[in-house]
Structure formats: structure tokens, C-alpha cells
Length: 571
Image 1 (tube, rainbow, N blue to C red):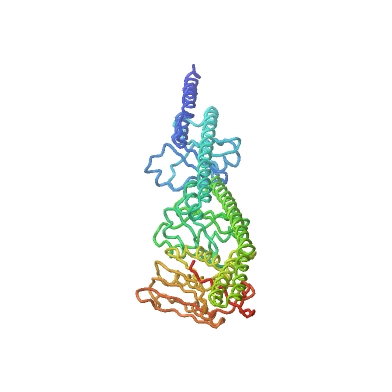
Image 2 (cartoon, one colour; image 1 turned 90 degrees about the vertical axis):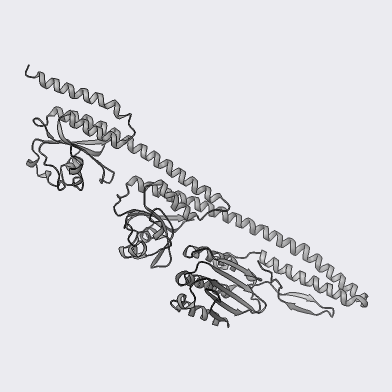
């Protein structure tokens, strides 16, 4: 008879556990399930307070669920218990701790301010696949102290909580993997599109769908001391797009240099303030080196606001997987473009051979026949000589075209100047409000070679950089023209004009010095309506050894005079 009330109470507790367990597997919301587990555990053993603290693989608090404390009181409690408390002792030992009076244990210190006074304590480790993933804590039993039967019941509840946590993590990982696969498919689709978007912008956009974040940036080196944000996406992106970051204080520089994933700050507080102003300060950042074709071309940085949580190991893994596979996709796309470029080169060489071996030889034979006929018919000799001259001119133009078709470059700097100029335009476009237009006039590639080509590219780069930094222009245009007497590079913008756009004169002095080395000039003039015109011109010299060989024109007296190619058509 004395044991009957205790047996009846235990029976009710067991029935509550059995009744609850099937329902837990039917809920999809992990937080709701875990809250029900904590509340059911508190009801089973008549505890006033209950809490479930879930930790991630790094030991950081992932979830903190509590019952028994009203919302007003809970709002005054800043954080879950810090390491070093009884909670951490349960995690470290992996064993249940049961105390009749918490004040008797020195490990009870460390609870946050405003936490309710706790007397009896029951802390049970929660395991997922054998690893401790949290602690189920109950305190202040309404009647008596916690018993061994209470401990066994709560350990059963902790097992249910462990299964729920594992299922929730598995479901979240599956959803994250789906988002990752979808994002990579989008990147691959863009790479395969002929008229594709900027791949860096696409990468940054897709990362926002893989993990929760407030800012995604792709950062590249400008020089040893500075980095530039080439692409930015997310709620904070407007303030950071095309911003310049000091390499010394940027987590991206460390990721690029080390080739590893690095966590830290996107930039220092002063740079953030200059870029974002009063916006919520950038908080935790993960930087992953972006490797394509075996080289780190930059770093992809994922950032949350200062009030946001740190990135979990699974989120960092997802970001790393995305960057690695996106880099591989980019490398394959570049390899495909190189292959297509080689096919074009082979086709051009075939056309050049056909022109040289067939067309030119037939024209040459025709010219010889006309000259022989002119010798036998003096009355029409002058007219026939004019036709021979036109045939010679056509041969000259064809030879010039053959030289343009044939490609002898192996190094980057040996590529045609037009291709190098287009690369500079592509490189500097992100720093400008709109993509510059570029026009080529005359035989640019055959004439502009060697040191002159290097200087032309340097002039285009410096002039566009000046427009980006000082002119406040909305559009600009580049023209590279080759005439019979000179080579001209002209850069026009619609900015504020000379007084406002000149800035540091060092850049314009460099342009003038480069022109002087070739015996030319550099001028910077105010345009009639708005903006400036930078004009760099140098005399055109006789073609160097890198140009096409001079072509001989036959004369009726048997002599030969040499001429330069006559290609002056616009492209």
C-alpha cells in the first residue's frame, strides 16, 4: 500500500512517454518537435524548468530551446550557459549529472545573468550516432528531488531528441545539397550559353541560394596592397560592389595566398564605414579561394551582418563544394573556348594557304600574261599596265590579309593588339558605370607590334583607369587608328571635364613619356559639350620584322619598287 502511489505515478509517466514518441516522427518542424520533447520531459518528472541545448560539430551552440520561463523573463537572459558550467561538464563527460542541490557543486557557476535560481539539477547527454550533440536539462522538481527513475525516463527522452536532431540535420543537408546542385547546374548552363552573362556575377548570385547570408562578394587582386570586389550580391551588395579593399585587413587576401578556406572579417571597420556608411556592419565572413585552370583567380566571400550567427561547418562545406565545382566548370569552359580558338586558328591557316597557293598565284600569272601582251601591243600598253597595277594592288592586299589570318603567338603579350585591347576593356569594365566601346581603324594588328603594342595597351589601361577614378563619367569610347603616317589612341568620356577629372597628374605624365619615347605627343582636351578627350599619337614607322614582308610590284622596265600594305578598312 505504501508503494502504490509511487507505482501509479511511474505508470502515468511511462504512458506519457509512449504516447508522445509516435507523434514526434510525424512533425517536420525540428524546433517544434524538440520543444515538445522538452515540455514532455518536464511534465513527466514534474520539473519547473527545462531546456535543450544543441551543439554543432565545433562545439558551438546551435539551438537553445527552453520551457517554464515566460517570454519577458527569457528576454532578459542574454545567452545560453557558457562552457565551464554543468552543461559543458555533461558534454565533456558524456554522462548524466543529477544533483539534489546545485549550489553544492562548484561547476554550477557560469549561468547568464537574470537566470532563475536553480536548485535540483538533472542533465542528460543527447547523442546522435554515438556523438554527443546536446544536453537535455531539467531543474527544480516541484515535489521532492530527482530520482533514479526520473533519470532513466529522461535518458529515454534524450534518445528521442537525438533521433529528431539527426533527422533534422539530415533533412537540412539534403535540402542544402539540392540547392547546391541546382546552383551548379545554373552555373554550367550559363557557361554553355554563347551569349552568356558574367560568370562571376552568376556565381555570386547562386551562392545566396545555397546558404543564408547577407552579402556574397568575389574579390580579385588589383596589386600587392589592394583588392577589388568584382561581383557582389545580397541585401548589402549595393554598397560594396566595385569597392576596393586593403589586402592587409581582408580575409580574401589570406584565402588567396594560402589556398585554404579562411574565416574572419571581410575588411577593417574604416573601410567598411567608407563603403557601407550606416548600414549594418559586416559580421562573420568565410572566404574560399576561387581556382580556375590551376590558378587562384580570386576569392569568393560569404558574409552575414554583425548580428548574424557564425557559419556552421556544414555551411562552410557547402560553400567550399560550390566554389570548387564552379571553378572546375569554369576551367572546362575555358578549355572548350581554347579548343574553339585553336579550331579558328587552324581554319584561318587553311584559308591563308589557299589564298597564297591558289589565288595569288593565279593573279600573278594573269599579271604576267597582261604584261607580255602589253609588250606586243604598244597601243594598249598604258591601259594594260593600269590593269597590271590593280592586280598587283590586289595581291598586296591579299598578302596583308594572309598575315592577319596567320597567328604566330604563343605568349600572352604576343597576341594581336586588338585581342589584348579587348581583354583590357573586359578587365576594367566592372570599375566603370558602363562597358566602354572600342573601335579599330586600319591595319592595327600588322602595324602595332612589339614595344609599340605594349605601349598602346598601357595607354588604354591608364586612360580608362583615369576615367574610372576621376571623371565621374557615364560612358566612354576608345579608338585605335592606324593611318599612313601615325598610330593614334583616343579615349573620350562624358565626365566632369579636365579640372575635376585630372586628379593626380602622374598618370597623364606617364602617357606623355610613353609618346615621347616614340617621337609622339599626348594631349588631354576639354570636349565641347561635356567630358574630355585623351589623344595619344606616335609616328608610324616602316614595318618591323614582325610585320608582313614588303611586296614587290613589277614594272614594265623590269625593275621592282616596294610598297606597304594598303589595308585601311574599318573593323
